[in-house]
Length: 38
Image (cartoon, rainbow, N blue to C red; front, side):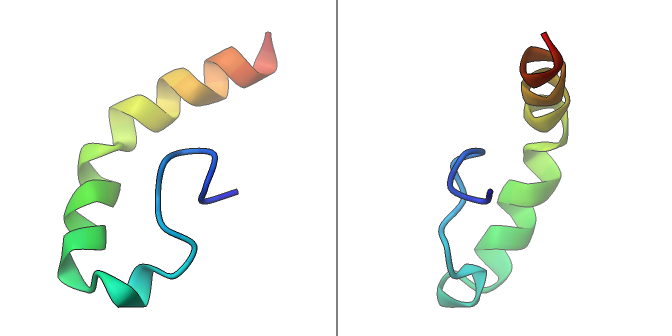
């Protein structure tokens, strides 16, 4: 599921960078969820 939104399978490898990407991906994830519902 993480791979679908463009995140690495193991967030621990990137550490804090993954947290920043996750926060920045909030809007992207919202669009992905809407696209998935269609």
